[in-house]
Length: 138
Image 1: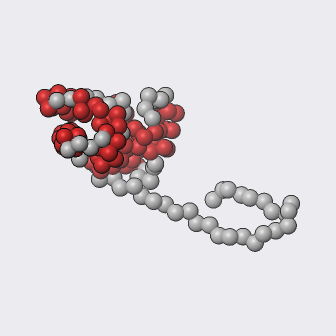
Image 2: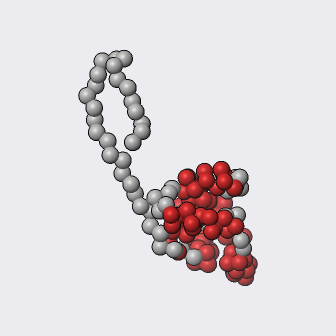
């Protein structure tokens, strides 16, 4: 749902007499978000939405690296990309959910589907204690 549709729906539900908690549940947002939207009139909401279109995000300066990693390794998870950003660029400014959302958005924009690789394994016969060893190498 777009921000302006959210704004209109929240105001409509409030006008219909719904409580803040009920509005939050119906719209799938937090109560704080409902309060924020209710505090804005139409013009303020329009201004706010316009600022969202032009603002830069913390991960924008790493976009080229992220896209290159995704193209080379489409099976990478957002957690792995987060680790690489921290290791290679000392980036610790964003949380995991922010990175996950950013990665998902760029996968959709550049049509880079996440490929899933399955590990092959098989059950082994249990040996007596002290006679079994594990090897993780492939």
